[in-house]
Structures are given as C-alpha cells and as structure tokens.
Length: 381
Ligand SMILES: C[S@@+](CC[C@H](N)C(=O)[O-])C[C@H]1O[C@@H](n2cnc3c(N)ncnc32)[C@H](O)[C@@H]1O
Image (cartoon, rainbow, N blue to C red; front, side, top):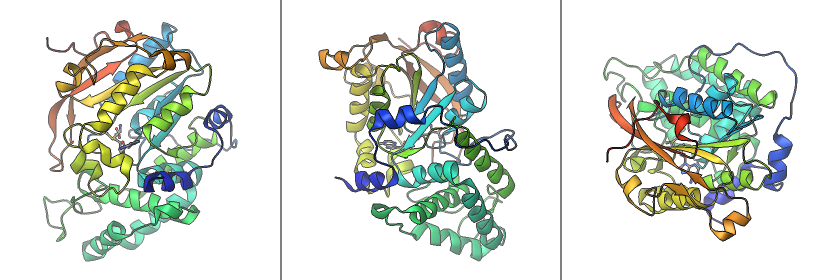
C-alpha cells in the first residue's frame, strides 16, 4: 500500500463501493432549514485555473442531454478531480443534477470537502478564529501564521477526526492567503513576506462572512442528501465505484478535470509525497486516464484539459473518435460512444504569476454533437 492509499484508507469508511454509493443516494441526513444560498461563488476554495466560464457550458450540455433523454434523472454528477468543485456545486445548487459526488486524491483538499460537508459549524468556527486572531491583524502576525500552516505536517497516515479537521483548516487558510490559491510548492503569501507587494495584503481574499455562508451551504447540500460523502481517493477508484454500482448508465455523468499536461508540476504536485499525484509529471497518468475513458466507462463523461495538440493526435490519448470497450470491459457494462471534441477560450490564472491570459481549453465528451453544438469550437484540422 502506498502512503497515499494508507492515508486515503483512513479518511473513508470501508464498505464495498457499490453499496456505499447506492446507500448514499437519496439519504437525507436531517431536515434543518436551508441556510442562505451564496450569491455568486459557491466554492470556498480558489483554484488555480478554476474554470468559471466552463461551468455554464457544462450545465447547458447536461441540460440538453437530459431533455433528449440521453441522461435521465435522478442524475448524479461525479467529479473525481474535485479541486474547488465549482461545477458540482453549481449544477447541484441550480437543480441541474439531483446528486453530486466529489473526490480528490490530495488528502488536504479531500479533508476540506469532508469537513465542510460533515462538520461545517466546527470548520466555520475555526476559520473565524483564524481570521480574528491572525489574518485581520495582518503584517508579521499573519505571515507567521501562514508559515505555521505551511510547515504543519499533519501525519496523514493516521487521520482521525482531529487530524482531518486540521488538514481542512490548513487547506482553507493556505488557499485563501496564498498567491493564486496555490496549495503546494513555492508560492508565497499574498502581499509577499513584507506585505508590501502589489498593494495587496494577506487578508484580501479572506472574507469570513462570505466563507461561512459558502461552507454552510455545502453542509446543507450534504445534510439534504444532495452532496454525497466526499472522498479522498484516486480518480480510478471514483470511476470504478460508480461503474460497479449497477444500472447507472443514464443516471450518471462524470466531469473530469485532471491536472494540466504542462503546468501540473508547479501548481499541484511539487511537494506531494503521494504516489498517485506524482504520476502526472510525465505522461503516464494522462495515458492511464485516457485508456480507462476509451474502454471502461458504462456512463457518459465530459473531460476538460488545457489544450495541447498531442492530446488529440496521439493514438494513446484521444485521437480515436469513439469509446470502444474491450471484450472484458463490455462484459462489465462499458458502453460504446462517439466522442465529440472542441475548444473553448477561457481567461484563467493557471500560472503562478497570477496574470490572466486567454487559454484554450479542450473539451472531449461522450455526449452527442447536438449537446455541444454552438458551445465548443471544432478543432483546427
Ligand atoms: C485541475 S485541478 C481540478 C480543478 C477543478 N476542476 C476546479 O475548477 O477547481 C486537478 C485536481 O486533481 C487532483 N488530483 C491530482 N491527482 C489526482 C489523482 N490521481 N486522483 C484524484 N485527484 C487527483 C489535484 O489535487 C487537484 O485538486
């Protein structure tokens, strides 16, 4: 067992996946009154390259597929590379899907989602204390706290409730106070160590009331059974869990937003010890994901990637126009679909320098051409 598998295993209960998935669907944890719905942003996490322009496009694609009955309710969206989970939160909140499942292979990110969903009040209380005692004071006090969280080594091999809470708070603090929301690697605190850079201070992205509202909303989505229990796990496990849940073909859609082909090392992986996260630095894990998606999924999916022509010219990636199960995966229910491919221009901050620039995002999906028509631009020939 790798270190990541050990730490993930401790983050989650052990029941067999299909049972866990089917038990979760429709479970209402309590009937408390709905808190205020956050106005604009739903995710408490800022994510490098978060694709705000992509979310409404995915929402429209899913709605068209539902109208055409290619997808049928109650519909579950699964997001195995959750990051800031902006897409799941938006589609759930707008009622475009009935359920969403989010998972991330980074124990820090996954702990954040688990705490926000399952113990929102404790997380809000801790977040407000961090703001009151350090962030709002600013200057050297806030930077020393930033150093504390950056250096804090939570032993992920032994994640009890308190360790998970600490990891969640570490994730939230660093995400809201670090340049571009970058959690790992060399990015420093907003405003620099001297708090004089660019007219920004460490507190400028830390609004405790707005964060509390968003965390409360996540707790509400979980308490009402809409958001399923978030997990710390490798993408493959998330897909396998739903593939083996039985009769899910039209009731599940996966949205996959894996680490970038070009930039992932700097943005996500640098200080990761976890093996599954380290594999994205070369092409290995990109090839593994492509092989899985080309052959083994019993449900439709939407994939987004920073555009790199190799993705659609390499036969080991997504050159093929179809998803073709092998004999073995067909026997397990994998479907045969055509892939639609196209580009979207986004403005995003997928760089450590935080400069916004237009980038092309590749979208590949097993939804139909009519679900994407006018939303994505055909690939250059
Ligand atoms: C491009 S980001 C997702 C961003 C997200 N779509 C958003 O808009 O905020 C990729 C995420 O995948 C996670 N990740 C990396 N390797 C993984 C793996 N093997 N399994 C699951 N998640 C992984 C990273 O921790 C990171 O949060």
